[in-house]
Image (cartoon, rainbow, N blue to C red; front, side, top):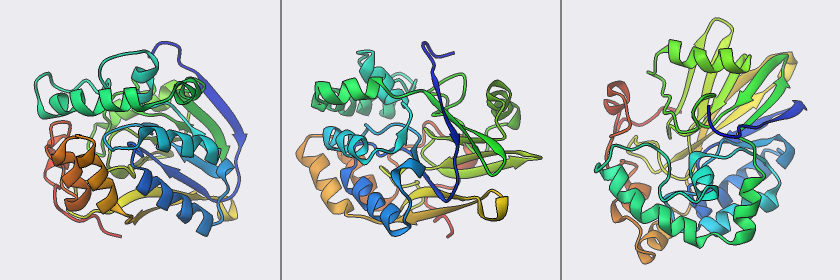
Length: 277
């Protein structure tokens, strides 16, 4: 288990919920999502971020401050946790010497030194998990999994692995982050949902980024994935101006990841295939 795990109980939530992951220091995407939430008339009390506010892009301080001022519910991602603990990498357990590992040695130090003491102090107040009741179901929000904040769980990840998080939390529904791809996996009365991230495209050859809407109309939990575009040209330019990995900056425009090191074979095969909506 991760050291010092805390779970914050939100009680019972009602009404439409908006869930998103990984702003990744992409202020332009986060600002656009805030407009979408206002359009849907979803208040901050019904908005959840699954962690990794800080990441690859160029405005970590501004991103954290926007989330803080917005007043939404957030958990720590592995990036926040490692910044808090003064580590020198993002904690993703990338293969040593791989492209993800090499690039993280550029963007993680940039993110860490860009954050104010106020922002780091606020990140320390965030729990690792959230729990609540919704449409008669128990819901738990994790970043990677219940046991490991940096565990990569994808749609193709065996259900026996996902089952461990359901068993550990007692939840009917898991809302997860970290993987970077939107997906759902349902078995019997259990449902694993990953909203995807808004800070980087979903490796599908489009610049779109993804979020998740939950609804409890008529007492039944329903969900839908949605995508949006934003001022990715500005986000791209800011990354280049700040000396961040150019290939990651290019991903904001092309929708194709630099590499698929973290992906299982099933997800690798979907690179460049536009997600339907």
